[in-house]
Image (cartoon, rainbow, N blue to C red):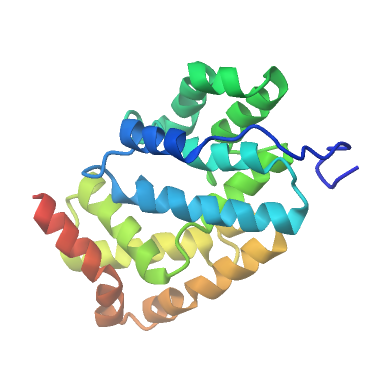
Length: 229
């Protein structure tokens, strides 16, 4: 048996073709929408899924890649419940139901439903790989700061610009720093180690109240936000 309970190696498991992946990108990931859950993010998750699947001996790589492509398909529909809505959308998708059998569809749908770091508790190997891959989707502190800063601008506009920067840094410390709920929820040691290492520049700047360093991490995000306005 493999580490994830598959006794039979699937040499040629059904997978999404590049053309099918492109269609899902066009249908669900609007280039003018939330960049933190756009195409670049999905491609990063796909890479992380491949690495973790190899590391953990998960052999149904076609299903794993499909989960990475589809995990945020509802981010433009219902951001706060995107994992639940996305799972429902995937379950009803004609192409997926044609490509994957009932057992694999169940694994796929549950992985999407349970991938969110703050609420999901995946039970399957696929779900855990997807969840950790999503956490690792932005390997640079600048990317995480940009995402957190952008979220604050859109959802907590009452804060000043400086307060937004510190809010973003505090959020990342609480989520991904030592003892943070995001890092603690990681399923693989390699994920936790990468997250803690990634957060060191942010935590150090926050402790020193180094606004300029933290600002530099969100510069790209500020430019994008002003362009959107």
